Image 1: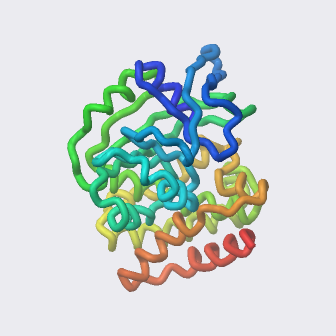
Image 2: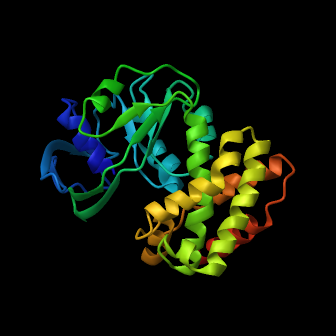
Length: 285
């Protein structure tokens, strides 16, 4: 996703650098993005945490587990007041930024774009979607948003990004852990009668927690919306399932874990989600 977003910003005239894990293969490179519409390329500067140039704006596209370590490693290079845009699944990592980088405005990006890596700096744009950008603190749309809205992606400013984040998290809570645990594609959650019942029960718990947390819109529509996502992504493997297959640590603590921490704060029991958290966490070991 980082390569896709970098190419989109570059296509709109923005200057782009990629921060990679050392050692660097070179100092310059070119991203290639394949799609049904043809190939796009974008020249980029290649850099890592040992670089010396100052960072004017930071886009973070890591897994939720890696966000704080990744940003801490290059925080010394941020210009004063440099905005930070977080494009990651889940919730629960913003407190670190409030504590460690209080002078940097934080923005969040939610995206349904689909992309996967073919080779270094070479990706496939597998599915067109929409990206929402907003400020959890309620800041107005920034000037740099123009680089996104002028790109080939569908990008919109979202004033209620917190609600959008919660809604996406709620849907992920109902789908991702089950697909990871049962190693199935999304569509199996609607075809398998046992899994179908589990999805309904998970949505029941999500609805109760959402209503208590002030997200009444999600509480009212979660059953319908989860069913729609399952139907629309039936052939997909969830990101959590992909992590399990690849032997990577999942983002369960920032998805189901965040839902459960919210439920606990509100004195609500969500036993099925608690059980899934434990089961998926055991897969991470």
